[in-house]
Length: 562
Image (cartoon, rainbow, N blue to C red; front, side, top):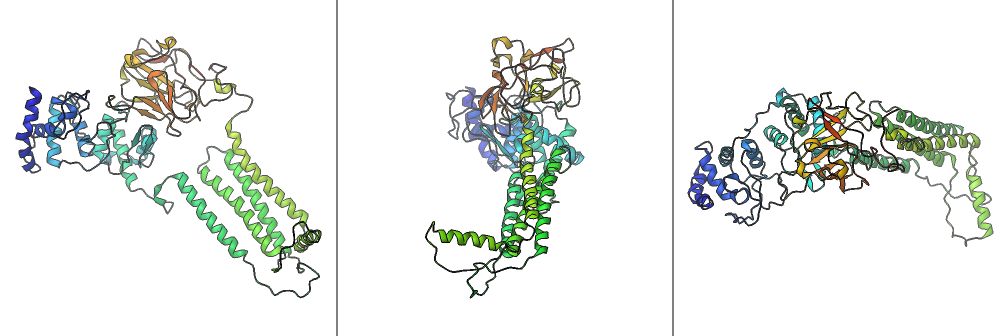
């Protein structure tokens, strides 16, 4: 009966809503009529939600499926309506930003009606002018860049697309952070305070029109494509210089055919120039090795690129000088001899020998070339040392976790069981341990205990439904920076921990089982316990070695440093 009344209210409410002007008579009653027309088929009567397709179709002929709206408040309604995320034509599709079919007056009316369905949070009023852009960059990098990229241009993750934020208003950003739309986790105030949220919004606002102190931004397409564009431009310029400097000058034919190649005068200056260029290449390659050795050197990447580019540039310049000034050249027109003819082979050897008449310091130049080649070869091989020790792999098994070690956040504050909320994730560390240690960071997520499907021997590893896993991906050692949280599990993919580098995806409800991507084994799980003060502590060490796989990863257990 109530459904019939609600659907019938459309006929009464729509004419009034259509003729209303912004700011005139905005109330929940007007919103109720709009809700019956556009929202009821998916969200049910009085926002009770629809989880079965047996529900009657609405006036838009949509097959209803949608979460309940009781208690979501004005905050969620305002976000989904002002971004155009709702109404959604197909409940199985990901909501995307688009122009809202409602005007401001109608949106206000709908927001008022949804807010009347149950007590919930109101529309926030952020103050980004009070935030700090530098702090916002740091916070955005830690909490948001894994999905949205550090430039807020959006990105991809398994089963979803993280939208760009360049059209998002400060209010919409504040709303999204608190509600966690679609698969995005929510961030409560104990994770991101209102002051920190102001800084994040200030950074996103700055990112819409950032400064470009380096000059041409190339559309801010990212460091790797920008580097490729730079190399492409440099390669074209280098080839152009080589063609310009090495362009042959036409010379008259020699009547005397006794010599195949005309004699050339020695050019000591050119030889010294070639030697200096080769030594410069060797020096630049050695510089690459030196810069690579200092991990904490500011602008290290730029120095490495400059050193390697100079090394190849010096070699190219040396070859141009040799070809232009030290090799005797002559243009001859004659038919090709038959292959394998002895006379032709002798003439070829004579030609090569006579072409080097101008060289007077062959051994010195060969030594310079050898030095340049050796240094460049070493520069190309040195990065392989970063792959790790070959024989001594004992350090790979060491972690700072043992029974009784408390879980703390990035500021050293202990994590309390009662403060761990669902639909979000936390990064924690071993108290007193170096945060940079491979085995120190962990990801903490909370679920309903009934959602967990852990091995029998791990049944007591998740007090209150809280699970903890290593934050280091088992594929290539990247950081697990994404948590996929379904807002409406009926039509959305389940929860997952995701590495944004190669999209290895792990199911945290099933002991971090790999469900997508190149990772070859689950994330190691850390057993948890709760002390008398409600603080989360480790109940032992990880279930397996932390980090990417190597030859002995399955043969030994993790251990504490000796």
